[in-house]
View (cartoon, rainbow, N blue to C red):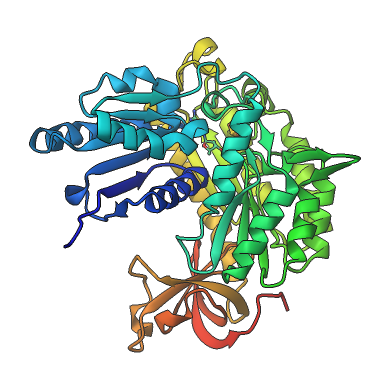
Length: 473
Ligand code: 5AD
Ligand code: SF4
């Protein structure tokens, strides 16, 4: 007799942390006997892993919940779970919606499978969030998260032979615009042995590139007995593991502490990718102060200079917020100036979005008009595009090594290059995107590509050969 399993559809919004949480939850649900489905209409359970970082991210979820309310009219037994940052932020308020059955915060994800089982049996709504998110995380919670993380491993499902490993939870920085400290709680670094065991296990499964994740990954700090471990220690230890060929880490906060050691690890260890995602957010000292970023534009640029001199060939990426309260044209010009000096490989630029109960939302009027925010966003992107174009053009006629990700999802410009083989996408150690033609079985392998054409964000080239390893040189 064919037994129909209960089917789950999962949808993720937001950052890499959320993607990782979704994979852990997926694994936990599968082990509990649930089946996955890619079709929302076939699902018995829908899990939405949500993001609160900007209003737009939340609006997408609300609009989706609106659709789900209709879906539920025809399918009364459908169970809808909202997990992640919005679940923590809005808690019981979300449960009032007809569409929602379960609300589960990021700290409670180890409980999600049980909550779903219970809701299916008892047909009752349920909620698990932290009541005082900034209190010290209890040992019990830390242990539950640690067990969950090590049992269900890590995010090795998205790209072949790549995996993401969380090294820390939460954030203690309290940038005045940011909701993260209020939804993901205080900084907690995971034990180095647990991280390294996880990386070893992944290497055993064929993983070649591991990306260490933290909101401020360079603040990683763990004391065991006499020794205090920092991110650089993790990099050296992970590099010892056979099979791991590239190691990346995101996202870094511009701070002095541990900085030189981390840069030194990039310089010393060929396996550590020379890539630093280090958001500046603004180039105006007045705005940086209002944002509670603990550096000036000059200190930030000095850090970058130091990083580039310790680890030559370093590629940097950044984030900026335009239209923060009080941002004048002069402040914006200071940002343009910093962006030019920093010579980023690429940048993520966001329009300021007031987040409820953050310090900026409570104390500073959102006084930069939408159209000015939009204009500054476009202007900054244009300046960055030029810089990215100049940096990428230096690759023309050179050979680069990439880890192949798989088929290129978007059609690319160089259709004339099509030679009967599909277009693949890969990335260099420094995170440059490379598109070339090749057979799909190259996914998960290292390849040398000769660059024949460049655009600001993408390099195009021809496959030269397949590489045995990812070491530089
Ligand atoms: N409005 C706009 N952008 C924001 N970010 C964080 N909070 C906000 C906000 N309230 C941006 C920052 C951060 C990135 C992940 O999102 O640039 O680095
Ligand atoms: Fe948010 Fe600042 Fe923490 Fe980054 S460092 S997560 S921007 S509070």
